[in-house]
Length: 169
Image 1 (cartoon, rainbow, N blue to C red):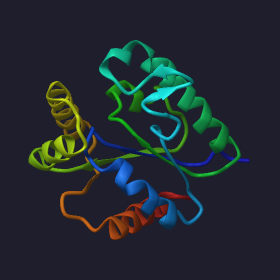
Image 2: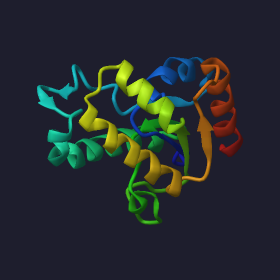
Image 3: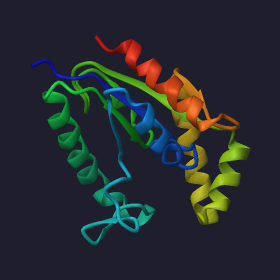
Image 4: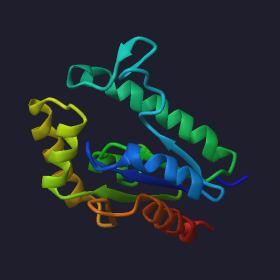
């Protein structure tokens, strides 16, 4: 069977990935929808902290695990929509982390809205600068953008699923 399409929906912290997830699941229409944060429990995986800057040394291993999970689903021919952090340019380049039919879009909001969201969810001020830098890097890297500032999440999920489905063979 042919490998399924991979659609990466990347976003810096505060872009709305977690908020959008349940709405994408409802709009999926045959897509396997996954969020790289789904395996985490209280910011960790089997007791290993993942969701903090201090855990940066283990992020490559976590990324490799997700690459394997996505590859297993895709090799069965299933299309995958993966909500993920902003990738590095080399991950998206030919011969990079992902193979086959891969597309990427950005989930984004204004910096003012991102800052409001990060504060509301209790992020620390020292994390704000990293989130803003991720957002700026993402905007320079990924031209297809879905804005979340004042979007109705149900309508946004429907638009994203429709966009992905147009790319499917």
